[in-house]
Image (cartoon, rainbow, N blue to C red; front, side, top):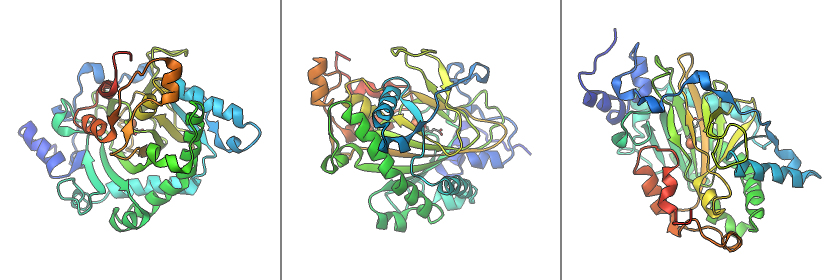
Length: 365
Ligand SMILES: O=C(O)CCC(=O)C(=O)O
Ligand SMILES: [Fe+2]
């Protein structure tokens, strides 16, 4: 029988406060999405208009060979245009990718009370947070997504404090992807005239977080969104998606590419990882690299999982466009700020496209 939530508050309490998540309402057997999840028409995703991004994945094993220069060019070109690309031969074993997806399904399949212990208000660890949507208190319509977030400080704390169901695979994912992240960053910063030695790496990716996202099947995918339009706020995001599809990126208006201003789907490629440029790389590069505006569609057939690693500077890091780029450009398009101030602004507002960058823009942007 379809449950009835007498008003929006009781739905909000059930999903958000009590930690049942979207999974909780789906498990009750609803046949229509509750009003709280119905997006305004402008945000609904029209599947019929979707075209796919046909750009082949970048083979990272070539970075170590004679084609190094061409590989770097491909990475730079992707960062300057779509802000999204896929990579293969990235160093993360295929079996680990499979275990990660399985682990995410297992975790979200746990009874609600086992997940709800990690709600922000009650979590036994400051590193771990389970939640739903993005900032539910601030959103006009909720996002059709539950997640668990695991911040990395060191191996010991991860192995003690991250949920026992996920800790080993999530930590392995973080470790086996580190070298790839370093190489991508080296390529991107090198192109801007900045060398990345070990002493500087913390300034760019001193903080890492592994998330597991769960998008349950949705009775009305055309009315809802999994994740609303946003760009990631950090440096680089590494994303493992499963075979369901539904990740869309907006082709920027101001780049030399086909389909300007259109949404294109990043198709699942078995064994590949998706990389996207975050706001900090857009700022350090004084706007040359594009943090990609993206969003996620829901589906009525199967639940979807995705597992991002968010890399970013430490909260205390001062951020500003790199001096060598500003010198060349003759103007700084972004001001100097503290990364923690950027984060507070990002998490203080509902997803709204690339509005997060307004925080850092100067009049020249
Ligand atoms: O699920 C996805 O494919 C993307 C998720 C995402 O954009 C995010 O977690 O920031
Ligand atoms: Fe994202």
